[in-house]
Image (cartoon, rainbow, N blue to C red; front, side):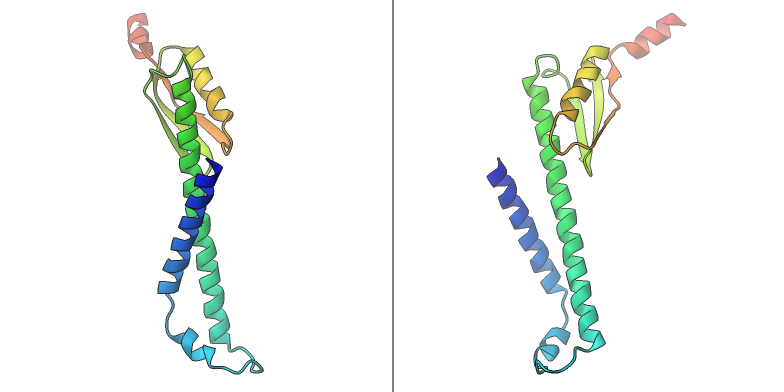
Length: 144
């Protein structure tokens, strides 16, 4: 799995490099002809810095999206392997390491178990458990 993750990150980084290269204008080719002994002009230093910054930001966003997808997949896989949760329809969404759980479970124990499993996955920073208990709305209505 680590090999697949590394390959995916490498692929995303190469796409980011390609995209950053496509945004370059002709300043780079004009500045390539400058002698090594000449001082760099402010225009050339600014464009190189912005391309590097853009590339870094793009790579960070791509890496975070890949990490979030891997966390979501890992959490869902653990739910499928768990006898308490495998038959339930729990939606898992991950953004910047925060896992949000939505859907319905049969009781408080299953809700707690879902949180515990998600917290045990590498890359999870926080769990926002928005799961509801099946029949709790019906029970609240009959209690009135």
